[in-house]
Length: 186
Image 1 (cartoon, helix red, strand yellow):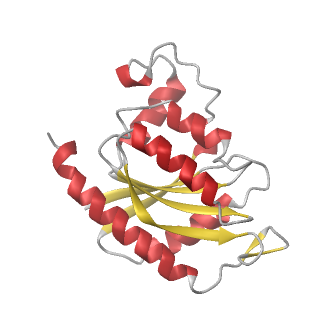
Image 2: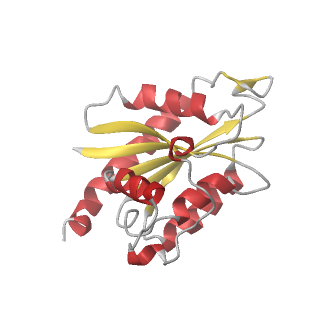
């Protein structure tokens, strides 16, 4: 059974990402074809990338990097919950991704974006990053608008049709994670 992380991609005070991740998890945990876990990057206290060697070498020297590495390596796929800040993902999520390399490769990723325009630019930004890390990103994505899926831009109340978007994205993440297991097991 595939293990999929639902990664909260913001550390901002008052962030909407935690409510969104919990909603995605509530939908995902009804499934029996994979295991899901919320991973909050805020719990790892990652400073700006402070490892002296390239992450591709896997020669980590800092306890926080080793802890982050173990967590990310334990998954077969990822669902990134990302805000959109200035047409990109959050700096905190980009930094967390940049700490590692091999832990990400040959896995699948899906995206749940939230912002004024559904975080379309943030997800496109993440797709480019995933390509460099050899992560297969799935086509289906969830686009949550601050105007229609939140009250007062902060109280998360997703439209009911968004559930089918989450389910389609999860279907693809599981299928691709399973298919890529051949590469991970070599």
